[in-house]
Length: 194
Length: 172
Image: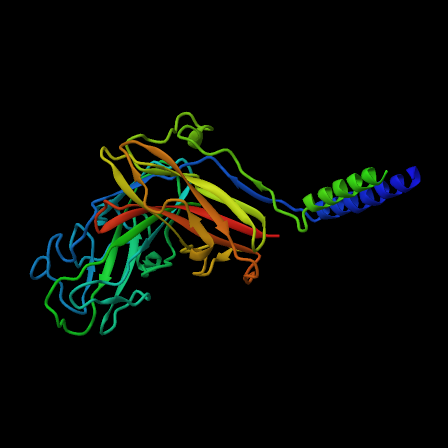
């Protein structure tokens, strides 16, 4: 009977132990790691009315098929190569502890004629085009298409605790307005670790 | 003797029943980032108390596979002088660096945000747990992919800031 018990014990042991070992061999752990860092930016001002900085024609009213800039030197004044601070309406104050990328998205309008973003930088009958630019950029060749979502980074590898100024280029739709009422959109500037 | 045999059999069955029929992943949960942890390596660059910030900047997930869980909190600080509501969402990355690719829109169904609209008191810092759980049988569309966890202060105007945590996922 002792032999029977011993055999039984060994059989059970063989059943259990190898199974565990075999399972452990395939037990690759999912690992999650993160580096201590914080992302912190603010942006000012928090609004822009097209053609309302200086005003071309009727201040605050945009006409169709026209390119406007959030340029304090003039609503239809093309930024220089390279762009200087004075040509940028917005300031990002960056207090992040790490190098960051800044990305700007410009969704479709709501209200009024509800122009949609062409995602190509150019306008169309019912679509507007948008670009973004920032200080130091060669505007003519470096401006970045501002899409409704998934834009490329406007500024890559912005050093920690370094501020930057930036602006928007907006080309209104080519077809005549039909509603005569304002339309709005919420532009988002996103900060991510590089 | 029969009793002993029976006892051994019951014991053996009990042990076997306790063995996993499949292996379970072990999630290595790093320590939760805290207010000071965000800049522990640079004492001259502490997170500001009077501005909104998030931590960390990147979360790296390795050895991932469908049905596995990966968790990490996003730490949010409300720098406003009043209570403020934040919107926390998961979304595809705007842009990625090779060899990573953008996660598909379905990522929004694979990520659980413990609290999508937390209301933070003035100067409060809070951890919100983010859980990635790709369904079993989901298509492994790329060996390395990325998505972003977005944090937005909902009190902002029409030109607003968004702070994002990059989640970089490497499949096993």
